[in-house]
Image 1 (cartoon, rainbow, N blue to C red):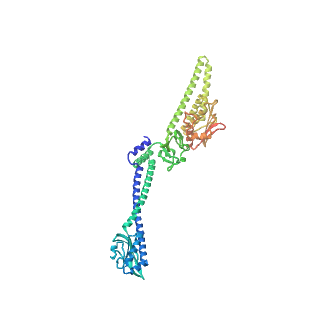
Image 2: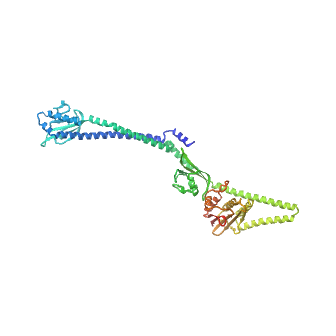
Amino acid sequence: MRAKDRAGWWRGRGLTLAGQVFVVQLLVLVVVIAVGSALAVWEVRRQQDDATRQRVIGIAVSIAQSPATVDAVHTPDPEVLLQPMTERVRRRTGVDFIVVMAPDRTRYTHTDVSLIGKPFSGNIARALNGETFTETYTGSLGPSIRSVTPVEENGRVIALVSAGVTRSRIGDQVTAQLPLILAAAGAGLLLAVLGALALRRRLLRQTHGLAPAELRTLYEHHDAVLHSIHEGLVVFDRDAQEAAVVNDEARRLLELPPGPVRREDLPVSLRRADTVEVRDEMHVTAERVLLVNQDVVTWSGRQMGTVLTIRDHTELRGIMGELDSARGMAESLRAQAHEAANRLHAVITMVELGHVGEAVEFATTELRLSQALIDRLTEAVHEPALAALLLGKVDQAIERGVELTVAQDTALDSSAPLSAQEMITLVGNLVDNALDAVSHDADAWVEVTVRAAESELYVRVADSGPGMSQAVFADAMARGYSTKSDHHGLGLALVWRLVARHDGELRAERTPESAVVVRIPR
């Protein structure tokens, strides 16, 4: 199932993570904006109350301190002068009532003229003591915010002035500001919804439309699979130098330490595989032969990163090496059988023709040459497996038209510190590489030198070919490299792995002749 189809299948099973975040966020935003709007209305109401208190105090004090008010109070009929004056002030200032009263509460003025001469309802005790104050009181016009202040003459309270605004008028003032508050709340809600939609879209893209339960299931399966598969897995995000995922098998195969893994922590040959696809490429470390594949992961046309898979082919390559050795030995035996058959036919023919003496001499000479080579190798090389390998390689080289010789200074008492199998791998791969390099050349030759001293094991395989540059040689040691399309190019890499395991040295020479030299401390 493709990734996009799978995402669609998940979406059909419930509300996505992005959808759930959107719904929760929208609910929270609606609650916050509603509470904020209510607080805004409350704050406007509080500000209106404070402003009203300041306004009614100012009006009442202005009237109380006016000389006209003091003069009118001393007249026989104060309401005649005070009522027109207070009504003009009331209409101009927009308050609901202005009451001038005697200290005994008798009203001189009122908005409702029917209440003039009747007692004032409200608290006046503080004003009688010379204090100006405000209060919220339900009077003849209903609940109101009113102020009361004394009218004084020579330190004596001769009258009182009260100015007030009803709660209904204050409510109308607050209501007039509600459209602005509601518009601000609506704009805030709209912006919040747009922001929530943008966040939902981003989450949909990042979570591929999965629900929380599905994300949890995917993570659990992902974690279980990563730890259970027997292939190494290293995942790098796009343009990231630190791996996003490294499973246990990858750490084991690449010998990576715990903690974050960067490109620089990988073997040198794997650092080059950045954003390219790799198919069944052989890489050799000091301990293992690895088969590496890499794929570039894309989603909706965008590159997401790379997935590197690693399989251990060490045992398989070991078996294939043994098979190659057996195949080489079989080829040598076949070549020897073919050559021996030719010589036997020659001897039989000479006997049939009556040249018995010549037949005996021919057979004796061939036997002497063959025995001389065998005697020389067995005397110089005390490792039977290596001696047999060299004898086989000589015949194999003759069949391929290459002259293979064993240097005169070859002397091996023991293959230590290498085992017989490791010695066969070392010398056999070097000789095979040399034969492959010169098999198509005229007058081709290969020379093998194997020496064992007290301090080191020395192996040198020289040939008549052009040799390899240091860069090509380093590449061939790091991973599978070959100049032939039908070879995996693991010979030199396997030799390097073996030499590195024994803390030895492997180098290429091009003067005075092409050669590969191995030195292993004993």
